[in-house]
Length: 285
Image 1 (cartoon, one colour):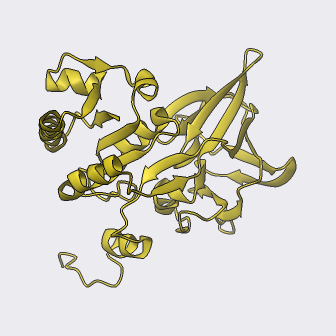
Image 2: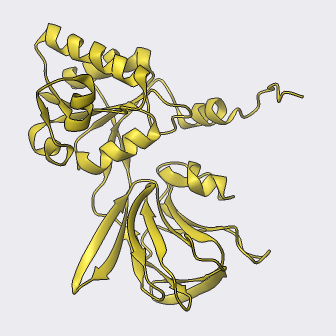
């Protein structure tokens, strides 16, 4: 079994943890490799570009926050991903730093379990070809630098849902419901729910609310504006600029993300600890 390690190189804590992990693997004769950017920061000669890691490795380890895990999952394909939280909230990263070695040993022993997470696929026709983007959390179309409030036209299975005058539209999975969608007023959805949520960003109509839909729906989004370029972002990474009335199709991806589960935690506990539900806390007043 060979492990691929991806590190948030902007965090010194993650780099220190990566050095410790490398020594731990070497002491036990376990095969591992860092992706190229991580290896360069750690001054390690041997590495593999992240685009090629899934062909050479059996398991991925993400050392960072949720953003690092999202980045890692895009290249892991269907390989298991162990998320070690070296960030802040950590909704997706299942394990703390102190739990890292225990999680790896479970994988080595074959006694681990997996959380299967649904992905979105956004597709846009470009020069007689279809350009596709994957997202574990969300697909977002925004106004960008457009100086006025554009209108976002949304169809479900070819039928018009509505036209939203807003700063943007978020289409999130249940996994991504606690990310950008939540900060824009969307609902929190249990991770294995077979639904998507469409959340408008700063809508210009008081009656507009987020809507939860079945994940078998095909969503079409276009921007009704006389001019401008509108960024399409997937999991916080820029995909392309959409032209006015250019259609992006968003649907359930055929590929699942496989996250190694922390069996000592449950989702309700995560909500209580990460969002401070039911806890008195000093607000500084």
